[in-house]
Amino acid sequence: MSRFEICFSGSGGQGLITAGKIFGEAVALHTNKHVVQTQSYGPESRGGASRSEVVISDEPIYYPKITRLDLLLALTQESVKKYLSNLKEGGILIIDPFGVKAVPSGNFKTYSIPVTLTSKHELGRAIFGNILALGAIAAITKIISIEALESSVLPNVPERFREDNRKALALGFKLGAEAAK
Amino acid sequence: MSRFEICFSGSGGQGLITAGKIFGEAVALHTNKHVVQTQSYGPESRGGASRSEVVISDEPIYYPKITRLDLLLALTQESVKKYLSNLKEGGILIIDPFGVKAVPSGNFKTYSIPVTLTSKHELGRAIFGNILALGAIAAITKIISIEALESSVLPNVPERFREDNRKALALGFKLGAEAAK
Image (spheres, rainbow over the protein chains, first blue to last red):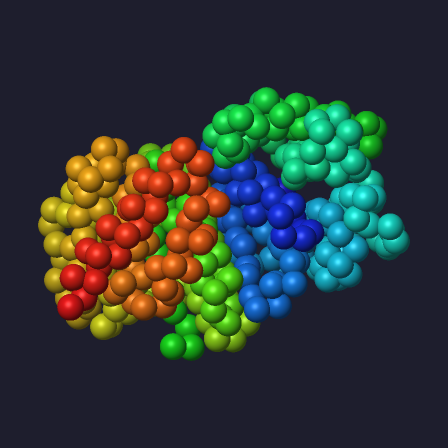
């Protein structure tokens, strides 16, 4: 892997910017890779779409914009529609079946990970879905260990939700590992 | 202003990534501009240097990397050394005299805003210096109002520190307004 590009996409309030930040920090801190993490906002994003991007590379990153995604996390149908064309051939698509009912097909691997409903049913609230998704991504890509990721999750979430986020990460990792089997 | 580039630089733990995130969100939410906010991490950043960047534009941003800075916030001498060459002619340099003892001179406007010491003396802790710096930047650049900025600061800081951060923002705005007079 010389360069690996990830896009976390969904709607505002789903914690995708936090997810990108945590993932970028964890990879930078626990591997020897270079990482650039970007979020873009525009007048068009007022509607509620939200995304963040992480580029990971063995070399310094001179072009931080995504060119062809290795992994697209899409929590909503809108985000599939908007970003799927950026996914490279043979890339990884992770969808949340709660938000993505029409599953696209094509020359990529698709994993359906119920992050929203698992968060809701196991932890009582949907808001841990972003961290659950990180766990799944770790299990599927093996870019980073669950322990390294956890050490970046905890300082980035409110204290009273640390235990829930720790559980969400483990749940996501388990779902991802099962899906990747 | 068609494109405005800002770099927030200093050392790890000074909250510069949070500052960039808050500033980017606030501008995107309260103006009609497009915003890209980026943080880069690399093996070299382990030493403790930290920076984040915000690019603001009237047009969609196709090149999110900074090319020539309009504003450099530098909280440490190291960050002055590292990023000053990116500041454009006539640009704005904001330094924290706590960390920057050797003040550079050149074809740019320099403002010395004691963010660390003001945070420490007025609020009891140095950690609010990042938000204080945002207040100063708002006053100096007039890119965004203090009210708009405040509405993005509060949800991005721990609940128990909201009031301190609100005060820090106001203190920074006052220092910035005085410096810009």
